[in-house]
Amino acid sequence: MATSETDFIVTGADVASKPHRYRWIDLWSWSLRITHWICVVAFLFLIVTGLYIGTPWFSTGGEASSHYMMGRMRFLHFVGAGWLVAAAMVRTYLFFFGNKYERWRAVLPFTMRDWRNFFRTVKAYMLVRTERAPHFLGHNPMAQGAYSAIYLASAFMVVTGFAMYGQADPNGFFYGAFGWVIPMMGGAQNVHFWHHSMMWVFVIYIPVHVYFSLRADVTEKQGLISSMITGGKFVRKSLEYEDE
Image 1: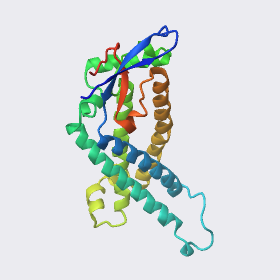
Image 2 (image 1 turned 30 degrees about the vertical axis):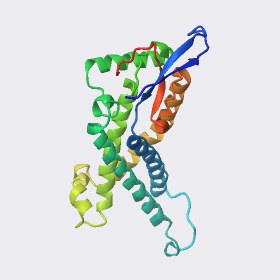
Image 3 (image 1 turned 180 degrees about the vertical axis):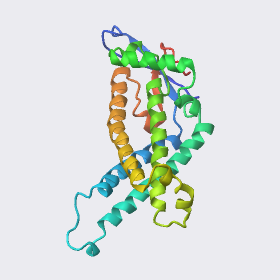
Image 4 (image 1 turned 90 degrees about the horizontal axis):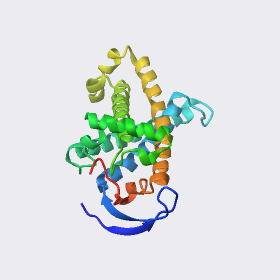
């Protein structure tokens, strides 16, 4: 793992205005970064078009046969779903063959140590004393829990979405592969309801994710957001990191 050192002066009462030695850590591969931004675009596409499909808020007017607004929205929704599935395939590969910060062990809380660090992190954030939280180069335990939940929610959306998509062709591949979801959930209307309801998990998650990323950048001064562009970040040499 490539590292480099630099001096950077951080001011504030907590560091007594002393200069700190920093080192550069490579964290995220180019494939994970591209996958991340594809997911961002896909989620936005899916949310906006999904809201329209559920409750159309405008049309071009006139007879339905004179325009195809719903059809276009459904097409864009399917495009977004395709992007999401493609990104999920790459992310699944990285779970097993990515670097140590990309594999499933670094994303899913697994050991008792992970859970102890999770509660330590939650306590530090609730008390606004982030300097007391355990330090991580990759994802901290709160982020691990959030990503685990969003991965499960995404899988649910893909399965239920393909089940509804397959209804257009009962003899086709998608109905054959995912049609079992409809009777299991009590009918197509229930599948649609839960698919639409789960969308709000993503509507809530996205601004919360952005907020905590910005907050970490401000409080920890380690370039968390920029790391999803550059692939790495500067970290303080004097700190011990739980996942190093």
